[in-house]
Length: 103
Image (cartoon, rainbow, N blue to C red; front, side, top):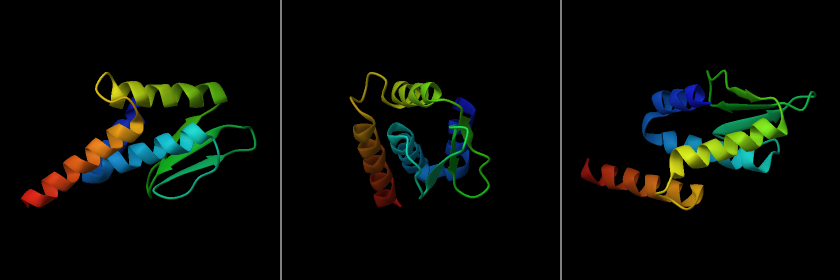
C-alpha cells in the first residue's frame, strides 16, 4: 500500500493530495470510478486503483483489503491531526493555495 502511495507522491508532486483523496473516495465507496484515480472491479471481485497514465496501480483482492486500505489511508494521512480525510484534503488544498500565492 505504502509503495503505491509513495509512487503517487513522487509522480504527482504538488497535486498528490488530490490523487490520494480521490483514491480514498473511490475505495471507500467500492464502486467503479473514473477521473484522476480510476477504480475498476474485475470479474473475480478484485479492485484495481490507478492514478493516471503510466500507473500500474494497486490491486485489492477482497472487500477486506479494500476496507483495510481505507483504514490505512486514514491512519497515514489523518493520524491524530485531522478528524477525517475530507478535513485532511481541505488542509492540503489550503497549503497548496498558500504556496501558489508566494510564487
